[in-house]
Length: 421
Image: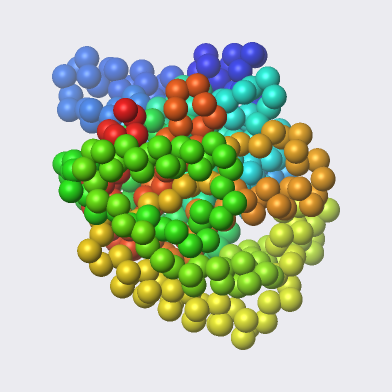
């Protein structure tokens, strides 16, 4: 709470709302239970943040927007948040985000934009849409942040802020009580300082495994290095970091094999009018835009409205091609433990670089390009820091087919041990 309140820090931009009184009361309750000798979860008292699109009982879920400020307070906590609270973990507050979760850069004209922890004097984007989530962990305001990932919204902030970020297999963590963007792509995931912390949170929220990460060593890991599309146009620091990470893994005994996937180059054409995500966002927002469109972030509104021209036939075509690519990925994954690639093309650009709309849309596309591959292929995926000490944060991503979450955490733990040096 002191870190959030520090006037020299990012707390006022990182959090849209802070419940200091409720957090202290919950912590006091856990302390009293322990002193009384009652059985208390070992996780009781751990502070975490919740992205502003999660329902918290008695609070208005604004989803990073001013349009929803007059909505009715939530009647109950979102299921994912309630499951963490049932273990005694404490919600500190609601974190800032791109309005309605529809951008990978994290800018918010309504509540301000929290700055990435690197090069604060310049002021760099935190990544989005879970912008406050990434900064809240990176700055030590909380031990864990809960975000969502539709096109990369947990992994992009992790990459730009230097944390671990996880995208769970779609549908594992219940979306009840979470403001939607795209029902076909939305997934809930954690950001934290380690693979083990993310695994613990994932297991609690999903309720389908025990959170005990399988013990794996780098030696013997079979890693497929995705070559097509995702390595085009990498920034110099990211390219050097990725090469350095692969070399370290090779020295540690991992087997590295190139994976061809030329079909991924079709994704920009599929998304020319916004694709599946935009179509579903337009369906959800169309009535609200008609009533209160002037209150939207114009850039978010533009990205949603472009889908007005998507026909039913287009939408079905997108799904048909997506199903084919998901099958291709599963087939090519056979014999591997994970597919690896850089999380983002670049390190965090300066906020000032987004003044022009053309630059905004270009840089947003760069932020989301690689992570969106994972959402389109319906995988589980994790981003780990791979930068050298003192360098700008950038992420190393590992992916596995849908449902491979537990195994992927084991692989990620082994990768983490090598990447940390």
